[in-house]
Length: 254
Image 1: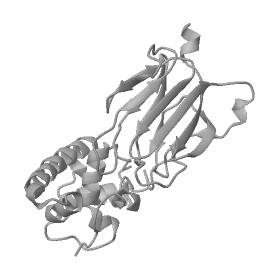
Image 2 (image 1 turned 30 degrees about the vertical axis):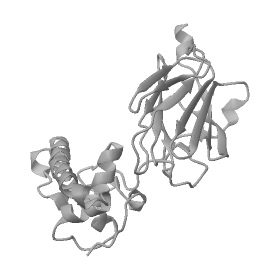
Image 3 (image 1 turned 135 degrees about the vertical axis):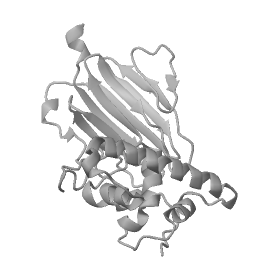
Image 4 (image 1 turned 180 degrees about the vertical axis):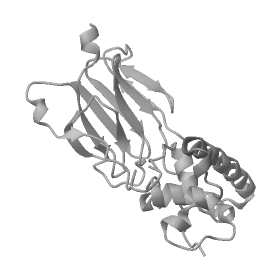
């Protein structure tokens, strides 16, 4: 039984009646399901409803783990419906956003309704499958290319969207606005009545990320300003780029 837990999987992905695969999932690291150009299981459809990073599949000694982000473009996080050998209900079981689902060897189907239907199917390796193309996440742009060995920063989807709005000027190569929070608030929120809430959320989130980065960099390499953080995320590590602006409304940055 123990040897069967670390099982090699073959995956297909279907989005809006278009499919890709079968693809061979590696057992090292995680494979992203999404619209991002770097996703190992990349959406075969260009539909904007498909998030850039919807979920991840990670191989462990106990089986494959689905890490469901469930995040969508401008909508609430979505649950995932899972069908497989350990789920008794014929229609499958529904797991909430941010749930982790452990899947032992067998055939599994994962479905999300994110405005379009997203379906990922997993099955064990069969003879001849070793020749299939690998589903492997591509590295982030520019990671590790600058001094002080900067590395790609792992951001949650809400963090990524908020930081992209704050540093959209850097991504677009424009001058820094006088008030980056005001600009970002309007990119993220089209409802003036809630602008103060959005602005306060941004002002609380940025220092937390700044402190996290500085703990990793050490006292001698601290990022002292908001623009320093933007430079690190955009110019040095390539963590944020033009594709992160796709989901934002209006980019008239002065």
